[in-house]
Image (tube, rainbow, N blue to C red; front, side):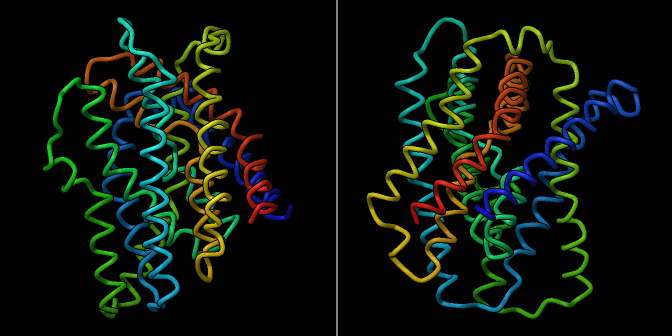
Length: 312
């Protein structure tokens, strides 16, 4: 119960960051266009620093096995999510169905997931969360791009050179080789990494500032997509973990499970606004899904954290 309360408090804090972003746009402190620049900075600088920093730690066999388990669970979830989105969101002439499928498959596991996982599990949670984020990025830059663009094959280069995967590779090498990193560099990485949640969620607020709230909350279709993202898919994943008895597979497996459950229970990713715009689609529809799913996650994520604690 204590973990659920901590996560609930963190979700509320994150929502306040979103409101600050909206406020800044409404008061013309920053412009809506600045959101794209903030997003680039977060993905290419802040997230890279956070990932590398999380792997600068003494190597332990338990944690190394935990990474393998985290990667396996993250891969399993994304496969389940892709299959479910195909059956539950039917193809139609309105290409918005592609944005809906993307909203179901891809969660805000990095920007929002990391502070929530830290609240529930502690520092080791970020270590496992990075493995989840790495799988997220591999799937996003392959399946996600193919789904939105309509292409039949993905560009392997875009998968291999995305910043998160490069950062994970560097971090993993540092971790497994135990290369000594100067304290000044570690402190710099840590300071920049600490900017992740505030700036990422303020940026989310920037994207949400100009959406039509009345039409957003009146759109029943968005609630359907949100229910799949926040309730159905996380429950499928949690049930599967329970049936397989994953938490008893190894020492510390419960921490890996919690990190993965929170990662897949997060609201829709910011990517469902950024990527559609890139491919000439309705980015505002993605922002509407983000708005509703982020608001309702204030309730759903603490509930899933509580359920996971009971079931472990």
